[in-house]
Length: 422
Ligand SMILES: *Cc1c(COP(=O)(O)O)cnc(C)c1O
Ligand SMILES: [Zn+2]
Image (cartoon, rainbow, N blue to C red):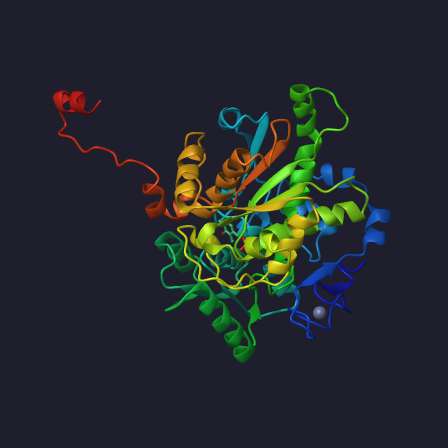
């Protein structure tokens, strides 16, 4: 059975066979959705077949993925996904909410959500025998591609803006990728990487360009759905046994819009297979200074107007989002919405999550800042079950983290000096 049967353009709806296209729609540049053979999957598998696999990584969902798992086991590439969900009981009470959970994507092998996408794109590159994979990145996509590539001995070239946080650049270099720092923005790096891929025949992983990134990101939806099967019983105990409780609401931070689109695709796959009854509600969170997708959502259009992005959350700092159309739909088609948050709100979210033992980078904490904002605006109600994604680790950007806290005092090593500061 082939792993997928083709692609469908998200703009014009044109369908293509697997060998016909590589990146975007030749007619209008639209992003392509990968089309699975839903009938065959439905005949061959039951949800329980997946649940009974003892592999906790994203590879447990192999029947729903458009690639084969690379051979050899126990590399970081084989360990992507399978992230834990924590209860944020203390924080949720403060907001007047009954139950809030956080799925911690910082526990992926290179410490961000991007490992899901990069694992699948590297698997694809091995299948099509690509010699070199290239990506433009604000840092995390590059670190993920470099790490997943290194895990299986694949060559990678990464373009990042020269002001990417040092920890992310260190990851790129340590994973042995060829690293090119561009004197410009992420958008400049994006354009250059596509030119370079054309010129040198490299396989391009770029977000919102390569159709396989969303196929990796959708695995978070599979995990959420599996987790929700058991968690919602616990939720029932708290809010009472009404069969008709509100759907799960998921908060996701949004830059290019590929994570929220990928998660939407994952739930749509499950709906198409008849394995879930309804889609969770997706709420996208953007930084006020980088809100091109939220702007389009509020204007009720799919036309994405570029902005001049400026935010402390470098991973969601994007002038022209590359997956904006599908990202607008992800909220619209799930009865969700968009919220925007200031850098000050992001910093206070970093501090708030820290008090629950979770260390998030600014873009990761943005989703939680979005929930705080949404609760204050009455967009979410007390009895709704809510899941927030933390997409990246605070260790990725220590400089930003230090802005969220008061610095520690430095004292002489004497008890008297200690008494003065306690
Ligand atoms: C990439 C990234 C995002 C946003 O994902 P998009 O697909 O660009 O919307 C959010 N948080 C972190 C930590 C990221 O690295
Ligand atoms: Zn098209």
